[in-house]
Image 1 (cartoon, helix red, strand yellow):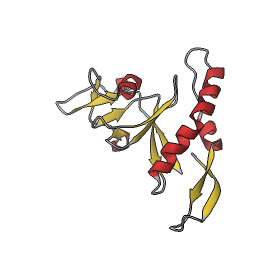
Image 2: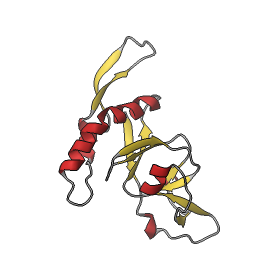
Image 3: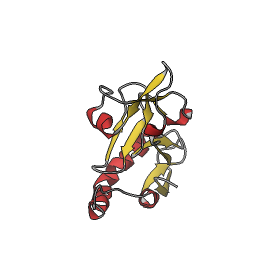
Length: 146
């Protein structure tokens, strides 16, 4: 249903030119803006660029899922960019929200410093998914990730 792209440790990509990118970290995701954001080199793989409308999932700490609406930036570590593998972007977004309380419970059980979930928790999350243009046809137990 979706690919979960983990962000980069962008402190390893310091700004080097006048064409730098604003870094989307946990603080920026929570506040939904890029004010006071750090800068990183624009010379990163384009798959780590975040644009308005992208789904971002904070998998460490408080665990949140939001649709980004604050302009272009670079995806930092501890955030997943959720890339739908089909045309049902909304389904991935709402499926993550459906599982958020479960994911938070898992993270709370691991909270030695900052609780988190692992990729296999996403793989085990399942939902119903339309497989055709006929809304009455469903494929069952589609994995959220995998």
